[in-house]
Image (cartoon, rainbow, N blue to C red):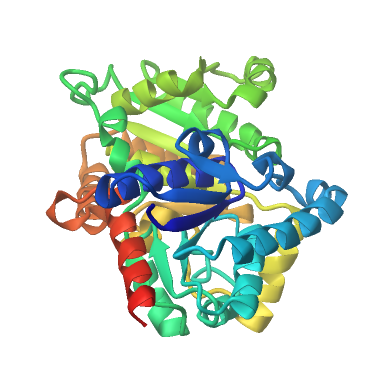
Length: 393
């Protein structure tokens, strides 16, 4: 009988990472491993015995969390009790820090001999940097998805951190053009992708600005094709609202159509978020804009007073590159005329376009794992080393 490994996730993305980690651990350690913890359908299909249905703790938004808070607290304590009883060779907590880190810190107090690996770093490099040092008390090794995070944790006194690659680099073939999908840019064949966000609040704050921007660009480039991939739960609303735009875009549905649009696109106008990294990996130069809600605007004001943030960019590729290669505009800086001017520069075969494309190629080098390692193998190697080190102690 092999070792017991506990994995605790709290949402869909963590279930995906956990399932790939299980596959890699099985391949490296052989059969007979017992997996327990908290996971979704992917992890349970691979043999993980989940202490309860992951959907109990998979909630987003302050109001949703408050409504389910008593259940979430019970699940934290239930998970801790079950892990201590299982006495695993290693505990891996995966993302969802509000849930998983509460579990890990309590496990450390009750069973300090159990080694703990964190998978996905909270954004300590963006705000609340003090969390890094606190994590080092209960996380023995941390697996980072972004290449600058090991250095950030070292500076902030966080746990030993290893860059294991981002899930997006595992799927570059879905994002990068093959054959003639992205034709050479000319005056009459430009393709612009517009991405106003995946949350209702983002659509509320950005869709109007993006419509005005598209109108200004189309007046200068009447043959430009404009594509707008819509998230499923917002698609009908987006379709209705863009009908009032001066130039109506083609609204796309589903992941396949979105990725096909990325493979064709010559430039993009995007809300801040992971999508900027998707576009960068696809090789699409972009302009990024964002408007925060009243709550986060208040946090921004507090941030200036208490110096919570350690960066001067809100765009992931810029943070990785350590320069503002991608134009970014926040709150009152979001102006259709300015956005349009930058987009026209990116849709023209000139210096602005070539400079950003060069930076996106440099991003490739920064994110690539050495020796062709996959993310799941890099993550599994750290978990196995941690487990063996603890066994020898």
